[in-house]
Amino acid sequence: MPDRPIGVFDSGIGGMTVVKELFTTVPNESIVYFGDTARLPYGTKSVETVRRYAREDAELLMSYDVKMIIVACNTVSATALDEVERIAKGVPVIGMIGPCAKEAVQVTKNGRIGIIGTEATIASGAYDAAIAEEARRQSKPCETFSKACPLFVPLAEEGWTSHVATEVIAEEYLRDLNVKEIDTLILGCTHYPVLADVIQRTMGARVTLINSGAMAAMLVAEMLRLEYIAGDDIQHTAPHHTLLVSDIPRKFQAIGERFLGHPLPEARQVVWEESWTAAR
Ligand code: DGL
Image (cartoon, rainbow, N blue to C red; front, side, top):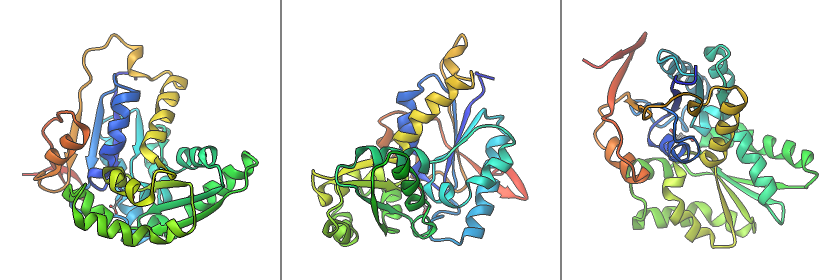
């Protein structure tokens, strides 16, 4: 069991921000990563469609005999975590929202927490609910203010991390949250850490950004230990990573490597035809 890989999926490059954290917190683990680049973005789709994609993505990872699934997509975590758990049949599933809400409530000083995410994540109210629950648990009154920022996803996919267009769009999206005097901002989409510098500059240094992947990676390390399935429990050869995408890998690898600061295995394309097959 410990030598089985961890499965990670997202609609595209966003989940790489979670992989980056996993490389630090659980460096001995092999990872199978799937970016559903053919069907991206998820965040503007209906809940029914996202739930279907989530099922199919989880099936793909299960076919790699993974020991854990990390839903490195806030949209799926907010709307379809139960579908992934159903397909996973007892294999532990970790989503983005719980760990991130906990950290935000711990970190905030004035109890004013901003959330940015895709349209689907924001509409689901999943973060507001998780923060309300956590605020009760920590006896710390908190108020949430949310904003959907759909254009951040294509900007991150394009690798426009410091482009002037990104600055202008960030200014426009984040103006309302700045007025609300939040002191903590949840990057509630795994694509957004790619644009963290621009977002931080726009919000100002007094606002703490919370990266959902970093919080989830800590939970992954804890779960692997608790379940006795950590990769460092075995005599280890170097971990072996697999990178899968559903459209031609074009820019994926280059942007992924630039962001990770780490070479990636060559991305392979898989195609959904009632089940997943390798592209011909
Ligand atoms: N990275 C994803 C998220 O965390 C989805 C982005 C998208 O496909 O819209 O929500």
